[in-house]
Amino acid sequence: MRLDNALINEIKNKVDIVEVISSYVTLSMRGKNYFGVCPFHDDHSPSMSVSKEKQIYTCFSCGATGNVFNFIQNFDHISFLEAVKKCADMCGVNIDIKPTTDYLANNKNKALYEMYELSQKLYQNNLNAKEGKLARDYLTKRNLSEREIKAFDIGLSLDGYDTLVKLLEKKGYTDKEILKSGLANANDDGLYDIYRHRIMFPLHDIYGHVIGYNGRAYDGDMTNKYVNSKETDIFKKRDFLYNYHRAKDSARAKKEIIIMEGPMDVIRAYTVGIDNVVATLGTAFGSSQSNLIKRLSSNVILCFDGDAAGLKATKLAIVELQKVGINPKIVRIPDDADPDEFISSKGKEAFQELLTKAYDVMEFKALLLKKESNLNTAEGLANYVNAMITEINGINDDILREVTINKLVKESGLDKETILAKLTPTEEVKVPVPKKIKKENRRYTESLNGLIYYMLNDPDIIKKYDKSHIYIPDKNYRSLAFQISAFYKKYGYIDEADLMTELRDDEEMLKVLGMIETMDTTSLSSDAIDDYIKNIVEQNRLEERKKYQQQLHQADDYDAKLAIGNKLIADKLRSEEND
Ligand SMILES: [Zn+2]
Image (tube, rainbow, N blue to C red; front, side, top):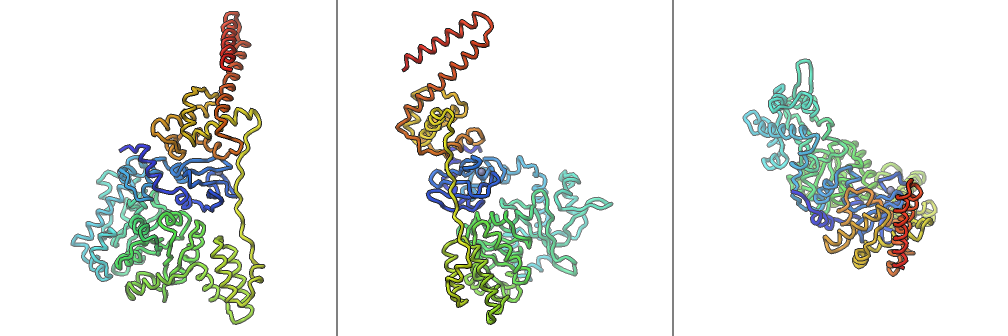
């Protein structure tokens, strides 16, 4: 199916550009607009403005501009339509592009996805076969029912040497492709399966394609308790969150997302009806993952293992989440247990109580700092206060800052002035200044900008432009005016963000729009439209005349000179008539 622009703009209307861009870049509100550091040039102070009203973004420094799709397209380096698909996913709109077929059709990694799909089918069959009895018994013993096995596509790799390799070879995949998949290794005898005699938990990408496995030992004395897939062209650990594709709808509906460490934690939570959960797979939580999380909800609960490694991971995840503007809540599981163990032994209610009692970040940090310092000694207390002051300096939220300061005043017994004196004031974000229109040929430039600016905002001006039949000498402005007029004729309204959908890959046009967005419009007036049009006509005539004069100068015979001279005279007469 081909997506028409009207449907694309419907999707655009369902998402808010401020919310979407916030999931990539931290934005703060200044006046009518939001500002953030521009991701499209080396920006240090926030130069990018995002307009909620117009649903467009514009960088005052590099001139990048566009609607929500252009942003995602440029940020994620994907096509415009892929960006549309991504937005549709975000707001839960089902567009008739099937991610699997459409996604795979032109995908250079098509073979990898297909091999994983085949492997998953094989593993699922194995678990249901006679040879899977021991594994099924093990799963039952671990209180995983048929429901969980189905929901999480759990399978089994048998004890064969190259069962999967043989299957993939039979399906026509080359050794090179099979090796690239990370499902096999090679030795002198050829390829052999990496996963043997393990319960297989498939890992999916955010669209639901299988891209790897977490293979668990289930009997005997296997050395590795579990084996995770190595990185491949389709499996990048930094972009991966276990169960993301299943949890996303629930997380959006519940307005909350819980992050755990392992697949078993997620599956155990599911058995007690908690399904808005993803897992990091024990790798460090990074910026890609925090951006994925931010798309689902800004209410995040970190629920890592209760051991020292889990504590360390929690601290790192807090830093990453705060970079994208999320202040997570933190659950610490008692007795070094993981969520799976806790829910299994203590039950659903006890776990839910842990969730409701989750610490906020400052409470959590204060708690850790208190554990490190002995508050009964003067030195310990001073250490604690100083450490807390460093933390408070890092808080951007004015209210949270104030609340935390007051708490510290109470705890430390110091007066507020003393603590305030040690704090650095919060930084004011500067709003970029619109660009002044260039001086040279100012009248003409201002007329061009004025005409386009008002055409973008007022259908009456578009009609006026159509009636005037003017020829705009500058090519970019000429085609932009033409495009605006054509858009209005086609849809019966004018909207800059929707126009950007129409112009999608025309970088030159977007550049001109960016220029107009960032210029100082205070000297423009819609009452001056007739003058703008006149000035443009006048400029066109000047340029025409210049062209003829140049031709006259270069013409080498008398007849040619005469023809050009006549054109010049006719042109002059025409202009006198008009004036
Ligand atoms: Zn920029």
